[in-house]
Length: 359
Image (cartoon, rainbow, N blue to C red; front, side, top):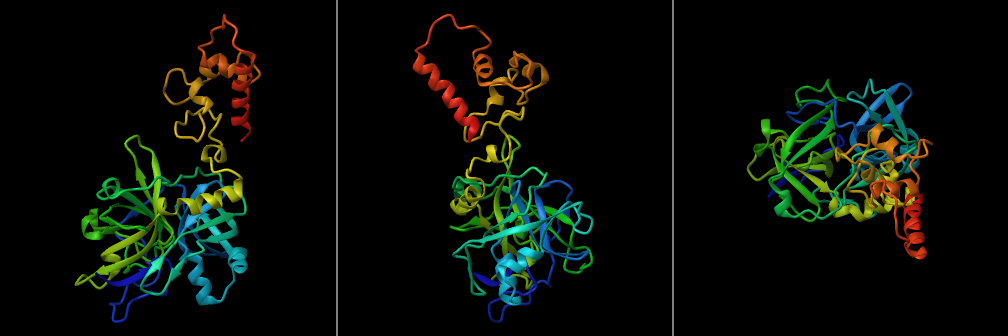
């Protein structure tokens, strides 16, 4: 049973009547560690002159798109009377381990809150949002889970939560620092993944200010994928009064994959993450692209990378690029064909490769 709910992004707590007082405003990852990695996790807030104000966290899913919680802007607009245009005009994404010294700060271009986002103070639904940046980031994005998770595949799994802020509610002077904590998923429903602090190392959890930050999962091959977006903390019946020390819920990206992909398609005209992120023809063999990656055909030693020797061997004419004809030759092992294929079949093969490269 939930005895209190606190959105983990802003100072105003949304609590049930008679709920215990929640953690003070702007506390973030509880019992986490300072984090210099996970560069696709960023702080978001406002820039007013030289003053930097971090309100939430977010994650880079394409070079110019952030994924965050719906309430990160919806609630601040409702409380302050600001419009979308005003939030966009002053919005900022801080890239780096520390907001104050972040070397890269990018502005906002547009806010895309889920159209069915709701929050009545006790129940929050569809708490997800995409923010379009005004220019591309140089950091490498982290893609999100699109295939539906099940209880069998999710519950009991470790995820890494990343957000900006202080280490405890007693220390309010260390906010704006990226921190992470490993959490264990204890339950799930149609929209949220849940974790209880008691089951986490050092009783770690998220708290206000971590809203919109990512929960990353690493597969057996070492690949990181975003599984969820921090949404709220809550207390269990008879538990401690501070929800930040008890449990949290994070919005599942797989449950909202259609919404997110629609925003990506509207911005890029495609949902092929490899095309969007420039993963085709980058000398890295990506095996999970929407289309076959030509680099995989050049990676003859199977180490996942196309070294100079492999590339130069395929680049027969020495012009610094591998044409469709040279690629087909590399696919066949460099052998000259002795037979004659039907002209129509040859034409279709080249057309297919050309179509892939133009998408």
